[in-house]
Image (cartoon, rainbow, N blue to C red; front, side, top):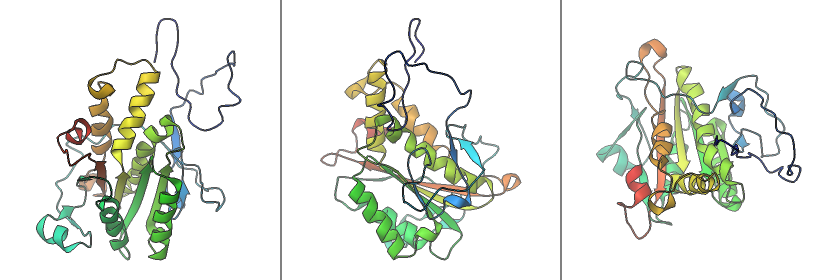
Length: 271
């Protein structure tokens, strides 16, 4: 936030003890960047792309900005290739295409994550790179997801981005954008990628917390006015690109948690 007499800043990371009143702040002249590329496959990283799985550093010299513009209409192609989920009810009745965005919505403990996990596991032996973004979940839950993917041999083509409930709001807010830029690397290389956001309700809550601390005007349910743009600019980056750009695709499966089955609440209608 740029005000006349002050600047509001969000701190990424846990090293807050060394920051005190009167500390000197310098600009790097660079926007937030994260590592991308094949070196991340099979790894568990945090919201700024740093490994948290204890398997050593990630060796890549390719970095991308987390916030970039979504491809325009001319750069896109119609969705025409199927993305098999492995669930007969979905694949036969409401099939998902490569480059599509399909919302998984429901109350807690209704199997939303299970649907997404089955879809990731079903890509085994194919040409799809999967990215699972965990936002605001317990560390034990993320560990269960990773162990299940490992058990089924799915970590060989999957990247897990985790911003757990114990991490700060800025990290929970930025995690989906970190995940999508990793997927866009494969999309722009002419390959196919699948990204799961689990879940965007918690990202909206983190963004609300961040916006209120930065003294931005609150709107309905205390969410800021640009909470729609928060999710729309994220989901628009999942698409099928034209043949001239390599004909790659990025398919998005955002998850939204409802309360008492209310699909017409503020954030569910937003997505």
